[in-house]
Structures are given as structure tokens and as C-alpha cells.
Image (cartoon, rainbow, N blue to C red; front, side):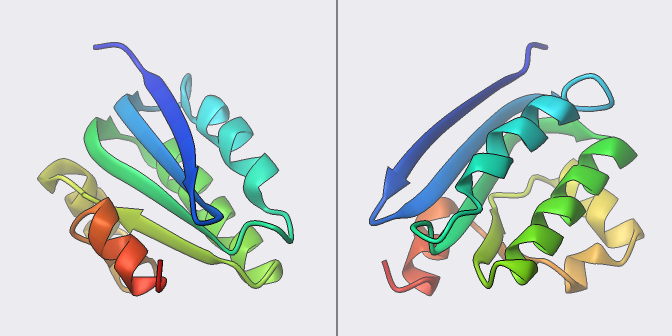
Length: 114
């Protein structure tokens, strides 16, 4: 399966749509996509993982790094649309209680008041 990332903004919130497998080869691409959105004009970032079929520890580390950046910059960082595989990976590491997780992007946007 291939890997792709598509981005757009809605009411200033960055929407990051990831598709494919997030592993040690693709997680740097995710990191490079996330980094520019940690700026004062972006109040929040939503990472839609509904089309992610697999995520290894490097993918989890990239998301944790994003969460750390968001806390440092006082931004919202929300994961949306987690499939069973991704949710299980976060659950096994007890990170499902650390991240803000929403069932889909629209619910995440509503939670940010957008």
C-alpha cells in the first residue's frame, strides 16, 4: 500500500489526512508535514488517521512529538478517525488516554468550535 498526506485548512485549523502505513520510512514525511503548522496563526491541528492501515513505534513517536509541540505552543492537537489497528497501537502504549481522540474530522472540528 502506498503512503500519502493531504492537507487543507478550515477556519484556520490544519487538517492533515494520512493514508497508508506510518512506519520508520514514512513517519519523517508526517513530521515534516506537521511542523509548519505549529505557528501562531494555526489554533489547532487535526490528524485524520481513518485511512491508515498500520502504524509502528516511529509513527507513534511522531504523533507524540506533535502533541509535545502543540502543548508548547498552546495549540489543540487532535487525532481523528482511528481504525482498530491504530487505536490498538495507542491503547497498548496507554497513549489513548493522553491524546485527544475523536471519531471523525467533523466531530473534531466541532470540538474546536469550528
